[in-house]
Length: 313
Ligand SMILES: [Zn+2]
Ligand SMILES: [Zn+2]
Ligand SMILES: [Zn+2]
Image (tube, rainbow, N blue to C red):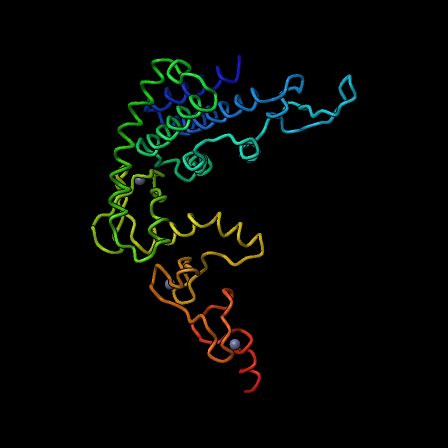
């Protein structure tokens, strides 16, 4: 069986799990969707691997050999194949496009499925199916240059399409409603669009009032979440990657724990906490230098001046 056949099999199994009402099949469905996408990605890498390289691009381990002309070539070694991280890297190196944002949604649902295990319901699954559909439809068409309808087969195609159309309409309604709220912060406005339900993992969260700081209700499972809860979740999830990269590169984090309310809601660039609304003094009242991010607090002195002041006492 080729990778492509395996991918289609995974997707077909996922849809069977998806249609079943048995508990426990959700987990299997998500795993199969995830596996199906990765198989398509690997198929692309397999096709791009040079001849006689033992499919080097899909192998976790790469070895170097001399061919009969004495030229050094890289060949794939061992049985293990590339993981998500490596696929991302190779795609970036080779200019292969896919919708990583939608993939991340499925990936995090898969990684957190234990957390959602009892609650991940049809809505969360619809989201994963829809994301999968849009990813694979585009990927088969643009990167594999094949007809997705033909590759997937009529039954799988029709099922994916119908789930996706309904779901994407719902998603668009939610995103419009979220965008219409005045969040008083660009960072928060951006972050809430990525939010998923804390109970079931569905991205269909909807403001229950069109006012500032509304409660959010999940249109899949009905769970309500108040502003203080989801705002912190939105900020910390949305900026986790950026914070990680920034700090790794020796820079300042984009968001910090608010010195006033203690929640992870302080946006450094906006100099405000999106949860309690407090702002910190950024210029030291003593030396006039800007106060480093790590020293932002409820006072108006930089760490050095504060230290010197206390010494004098
Ligand atoms: Zn929900
Ligand atoms: Zn605060
Ligand atoms: Zn100072």
